[in-house]
Length: 373
Image 1 (tube, helix red, strand yellow):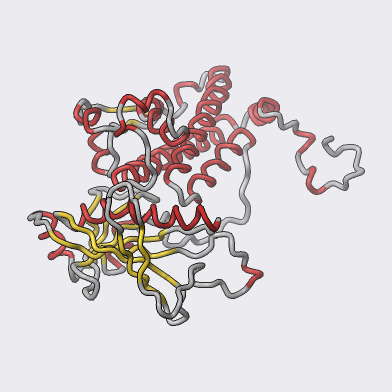
Image 2 (cartoon, helix red, strand yellow; image 1 turned 90 degrees about the vertical axis):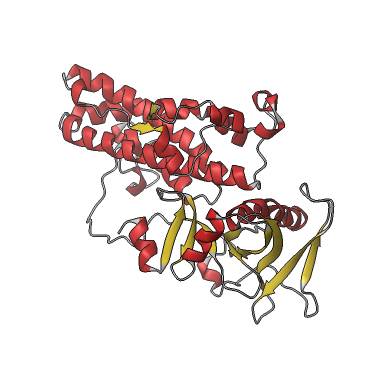
């Protein structure tokens, strides 16, 4: 089932971006209100919107603790609001509504936001919402996070739309009796899972660049071996991605508006070129104030800013998506064209520092002389 089919089956119309990417950020609207939502998008008019940020549970809460609390935050019986002072975007105090369940556990915060459209309201709200949790976490070390945002005309009306990270899958049927690892792919596979499981778009982006390093190593190793077999022509080419597709999937091509205007939407990148093109985004995520980003204040990454969050969420999801596609192509090539030559597996193990005698070491007793030292 595709992402679009999954949304439709749950009563949603998707609105932004035009093409959905697994793990990417999207704004979706229920079919019952999507017409009204699109009218607000197409005919912007400044007004107040009620933004709700729903809190997620403790990600490290182990199953052996049994009942997991619905929220780490508990409000007092008389407290209904919390104020945020000295926000970067407002000189006045911002007042958040505390939304709690029947156990007085805070499951969401609400805030009135003035903007010309519900989409812009969601974008503008992300920073003060983020600042609120940043402040609480900095004092308490509590791992607080939002799992979705919604926008409504007022506090009492139903949401017009939700801003969420799209799931990777709705369900997988496990019908394989075994899975065979290939040593040369093992590190890249591990980093792919690390990135896909991360809830931070910024860490996902860094993982994507680590996967790219793995792809380069795999291509070099497989390329040399395939050349010795006169099979280099069969090696998968790097994926080709058009700038127009990237835009339709919600990514920004430049870090600033000025950079964005310089890009030809008809330009086509191969996977390696795309990673190089977005390397400044990688630096922005890895370094708070890297010299290259100081050419303008706009280029410095502030994690909670709505435009940056949307951009980096889409960028990270896209890089992982295309890198994953190419990894699977390389695996198919290795198993079908190179694996019959046992020396490729042997040379790959040696290249990766995995001597064949180490295989099965986990099943050997510590004092077995054949076990790896």
